[in-house]
Every structure is written in structure tokens, then in C-alpha cells.
Amino acid sequence: MKILAIESSCDETAAAVVEDGHRVLSSIIDSQVQEHKIYGGVVPEIASRRHCEAVDGVVTSALTEAGLSLEEVDAVAVTAYPGLIGALLVGVNYAKGLCLGSGKPLIPVHHIRSHIAANYIEHPELTPPFLCLVASGGHSHIIEVRDYTDFHIIGRTRDDAAGEAFDKAARAMGFPYPGGIYIDKASRAGNPDAYKLPRPKVEGCPYDFSFSGLKTAVINLIHNCAQKGEEFNRDDLAASFQKAVVEILSDRLLLAAKELHHKQIVLAGGVSANSGLRTHLKKECAARGYTLTVPSPIYCTDNAVMVGAQAYHEFLAGNVADMSLNACASLPI
Ligand code: KG4
Ligand code: ZN
Image (cartoon, rainbow, N blue to C red; front, side, top):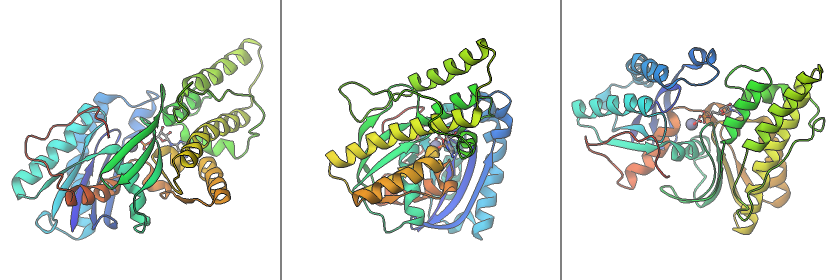
């Protein structure tokens, strides 16, 4: 089954054709990051306008790259929730137009489900149940994936998402947006034990995260250095911050795996591209006899291949929409 998938939930306009949930026939990503960089974050109105300009060309390119016409695909899938509402509406209405004109089935896909499904692309042998850490710019969850369309959240962030914490801390350190990857690169040259940073816990909720205190500690440290006329070592601070985030994410995930008896561990979302997190969890999972599955970095951040991967399972489960489909800024998984 060949699915044309469209993603426009944040600042990437993407389209892909995916066969049987894992075979990639094409993938196009038009990133708006350069437009948002000067504002230090995504400006929703600019994102919506850029999606409007890009979506037609991106979808056409995805079909061309796959060597297919719209008539030759079996269904159209689109990220319908959650995300920036104006951005989502562009993809949803474009997909509805394609389906209305062609009579193809319309498959709405949840963005977090797609991030998890990114793992099936390179690891089609991966089958639920498994325990997944989804850490992106907008979400940080520990999720029990009981089946392809059956999810149970067992831990969540109480404030900032992990990616948001990376981006805000990076901004305070003077890195461009989005800062996660800059912290990752700078960390390689820094001493992770140079600065003592907190690892906040949420009392009574052992699987939940809280990142705002860690982010504030970084901002205060930089502020105190400036007041004293001292320079902070950016590589050391990046490495110390990254070590703290990696420990927080890994500790909760591994505790959940132990207590809930999961041996298949999976990572997803933009932050799972982080080299420190990947290396640390690879070692820790191996030591415990767990398998660890992580997408290649290109499938960790937003793309449409993951939408096509999840859409296949949604279709098999009968989750198809009609023309009353609407985008939704927030919706539980
Ligand atoms: O999944 P994603 O592309 O978008 C959302 O759905 O939010 O995630 C983007 C987030 C950003 O916060 C970005 O800084 C972070 O993922 N990110 C990273 C790395 N690559 C992307 N964070 C840490 N290390 C990285 N290598
Ligand atoms: Zn995402």
C-alpha cells in the first residue's frame, strides 16, 4: 500500500511516499528554520504563510521523486494534531482537497504517534509492545506502546519539553535557534563535570520530568558570571547541561522499564538525535540486556516519512476520516 504523507505541524513542510509503512519511495523536507532564526523561535503566523507557499511544490516533488501520480497512490495521510493550529490547517486542508478531488482515503495522523513510528522505517522488525521516550521541541513523554494504535502515557513533563529546554538554554548561551544541535556539538569539546547543575524530580511521580529549574539554573549562572565580569566556558556549560538532561531523561526511562518490565526500549523525537543521549542509553540498555531502537537523526526531527509509517497502521485499524476532518492544536495521543 502506497501512502502519500504530508507534515506541516511546526516549521517544516514535508511530504513523502511510503509503502507498507516502512519502504521510503520519496521524502521531501522544506525547512523554514532560516526564517525563524532571527526571532529566536518559531513565529506561528510566519510558519502558516510559509506552509501555504511551500505545500504544493513539496507534495509535487514527493510524487515526482517516487515516480508516481496521485492516481497511483492508495491513500493520503496528514498530520492533523497536535501542533501550531495555523500550520496544521495548511496540511489538513491541502490533504482534504487532494482526497476530495481523487476519491482517495484520508488518514489523519497524530504527531507523537508519527514520531514513534519513525522507528519502523529502518526497523520494520520492531513490533509493540515497547517502552518509548518521546522527547521533542513540544513534548516529553514516556509512553507504553501496547499496539500500533494503542498508547499509554506513563510519564510526562510538568513544564518545558526537553527540546524546549535545550533551545532556551542554548539561546542563553548565545547559540542560534534551534539550539539543541549546537549544544550537542559544543558538548563534545566541553567538560560535562565543569558546572554543577540540578536534576529536578517531581515528588510522587517518579516517571515525570521537570526542566524549567535546570533551564533557570543555566540562565542564572550566565547572569552571575556577567555581573562578576567573568566569562563562562560555553563548551563546558553546554556539556554540563547536556549531561544533566541526558541523566534526567535516562533515569526516568530506565526506572519505568525496570518497574514495568519492558525490555524493548525505543527513542523518538528531535532530542533523540542527541549524541549524548544515544551513547548513554546504548550503554545503559546493553548493561541491562535491553534492546534499544533509535531512528537515524534525519527521522528523529520532523519529516513526512514517519507520518506515512504511522498512517499505514492507522489505515489497517480503520482510522480514516471524512471531509469533516479538522486540525486540532492539542489532542491526547
Ligand atoms: O521533533 P522535532 O523536530 O519537532 C517537534 O515536534 O518539536 O524536535 C525539535 C527539537 C528542537 O528543540 C531541537 O533543538 C531538538 O529537537 N534537537 C536536538 C538535537 N537535534 C534536534 N536536541 C538535542 N540534540 C540534538 N542533536
Ligand atoms: Zn515533531
